[in-house]
Length: 75
Image (tube, rainbow, N blue to C red; front, side, top):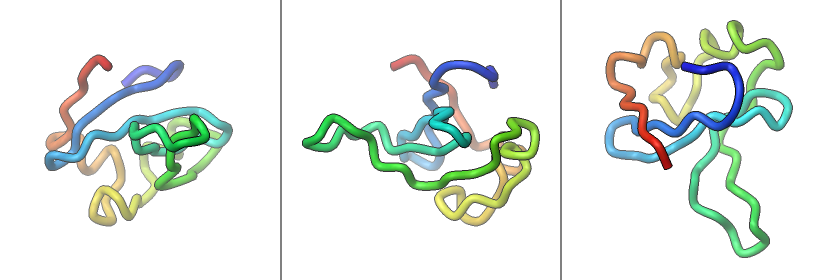
């Protein structure tokens, strides 16, 4: 995964993306009425640490642990 810009991915049929707000966050790509995206998880400011954090939306797994089930795509 890249360190900069939004990274769109699918995990078990759910479309999500990583965004540096800051901190690094996992976001639902569905735009709300106010133009914002719902933040599902806010993690570390450090990218490497963020990849190892347990994330509820990834079934309690880290991005690193769930990577084999993550499919990157372009939005």
